[in-house]
Each structure stands twice: as C-alpha cells, then as structure tokens.
Length: 243
Image: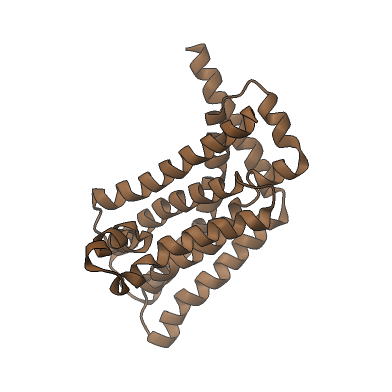
C-alpha cells in the first residue's frame, strides 16, 4: 500500500512541478490568448457573416487549431530539461520512467484543456443569440477533450526526441497535421486503402463525436493514439536512461 502511494505521489509531484513551471512562463498566456483570438474569429464569423448562432464552424476547425497550439504547449516538456541539463539529473533519481512520463503528460493535458475552458463562454453566447442543439455541443466538447489528449501525447513524444524546442514543435505539428488532413487525400488513393486512411484520420473520428454520436470506435481511436505515443515516450526515456 505504501509503495503504491509513493508511486502515485511521484507522478503527482512531477505534474504539479510542470504546471507551476509552465504557468509561471509568459508562453502559456500567449498561447492561450492566441488560441482564443483565432477560435473567436472562427466562431463569430458564423454569427455575423453567416447569421447562425452555433459552434459548428468552431468544432470543424478545432483539429487544425489543436495541430498548431498543442505542439506549442508541449514543445518544452522534455526539450527544455534536455537543453538545460536537468533531464540527466532527473534520470539519476530513483524515479520510474513511467512516472516521469505520466507526470509530464498529465501536466501537458491539463495545460491543453485550459485552452478549452474560456471557450465555454461561446455556449452562453450561442444561447443568447439563438437556440442551438445541445447534443452536438456536448459531443463537440467530449471530442475536443479526446482530441486534446491524443495530440498532447504526440507533442510530449516529440519533445522527448530532442533538446531543441523548435524541432519538437515541428515534429509534433507535422504528425498532428497529417492525422488531421489525411482523409482529404483518400480520393487520390487506391480503394483498398481508403478505409484505412479514413480510420487513421483524427478529423473524421472527431467530427463523428461532434455530431453528438458517441461511438466506441471513435473513443478507442483517440485512446489508442494517446497510448501508442505514450509508450513511445516511455521507450525514449528508458533509452536515455540506459545511454
């Protein structure tokens, strides 16, 4: 029981340290403000140009926004410590690699979800100016949480590859963009691989949930992506420890 508590405390301590470090930096607030500016433009364009009080346009473009802003949030997760040399010190401590990755991943996930919190005001705005269907809104936010969890795992993995934050950002950005847009190229591919390409598309799974249809296949997709890149990150940390 004591060992279990100590193990739980380890990743909690790492997560709290990461969050404290992150929100003491101006980068967090700059990313949040920019995310709100771009998402607000997308939302309110439907209000005043199209004349519809709904969140559909916001959710449609959310995978693109997350492809840029989540890598910006996660690029320093491991890269900063590798650059400063504190990562080597961390590896010498009696801390399991899984605990290190869990702590950093949880902190990065919380940071990513903080981006979404102010957008809840968009729901209030929609109901002030219209009568949107609640189902797609709830589904959209459930999908957004799952999408954020998957893309955060990709970002943390990319950060574990290098000590250069810019390289980390572009690796994560490239992977997220591919997963977001891969279904757009399905029509150019042989029929035998179209179903595979569609399955690999984060956007298609997200849009399915955002329509208010919670399919276990879509949920499992995002969980699988998060788990796969989490495992890759643990492997990178173990390799660094052995090296």
